Each structure stands twice: as structure tokens, then as C-alpha cells.
Length: 84
Image 1 (cartoon, rainbow, N blue to C red):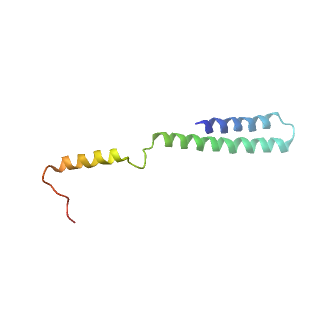
Image 2 (tube, rainbow, N blue to C red):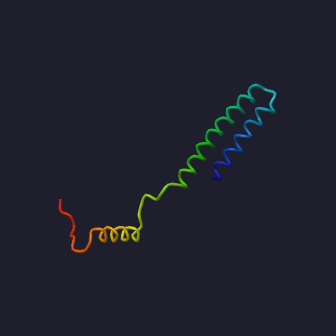
């Protein structure tokens, strides 16, 4: 989330350069920086939101054992491993 704020501040600085400049070159550079950093800020925000709501890819040993125990309990006693 810090990256989003950093890029948002850079974007605002770029637009500020464009607004306060008297030269077309500086204005173009400020607009380019502002729009590029605004796009990067949106992508950083989306990545942060997706990362916060995603699950871990790997299960821990305790989670695997709990999953195996629940599958064994669901099959019932005496049910061996299924044969292909």
C-alpha cells in the first residue's frame, strides 16, 4: 500500500510541474510523468488489493494433516485407499 501512495505523490508532482511551468517542454514532461505515475499507482493499488485477498498457495503440514483427517472421517472406518 505504501507503493500506491508513493506513486500517487509522484503523479501529483508531475501534474504540479505541468501546471506551474511556462515552458511547453516542461509542461509535456510534467503531464507525461503525471499520467505514467497515475497509471502505475492504479496498478500498484490493484496489486495490493489482490494480494490482500488471495490465499496462500502452499498448505502447511498441520493444514495437510487436518485435511487428510477430514477426508478419512468422511469415508468412514474400514474404507481403504481407493484403487485406480
